[in-house]
Length: 105
Image 1 (cartoon, rainbow, N blue to C red):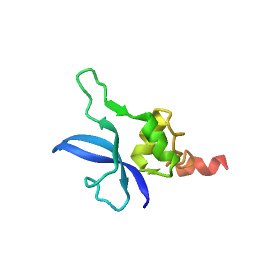
Image 2 (image 1 turned 120 degrees about the vertical axis):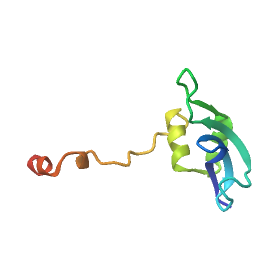
Image 3 (image 1 turned 90 degrees about the horizontal axis):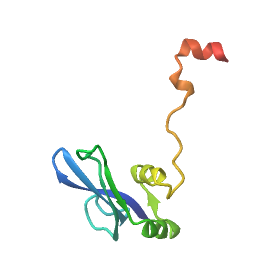
């Protein structure tokens, strides 16, 4: 059984709220899970703060036994120092216009 750390969506239309869960990779996104390991509210409150609660000890346990985080969960865990930040998905070279790129080489 491959365990994934992923987000489970709750909330209303246009008002998402997520639970971070450890789940079997074959289970549906909002289906059966093994354990709730945190919550994530991407909608900022009046003070402009997005709420994230993590059970760091349980997250470290699941990673130690081989659980694989999803892309978004890996990004969140990288922000909080639980995992090393994932590599950037873009190339700085591609941000330079082609005509200027060829001049540099």
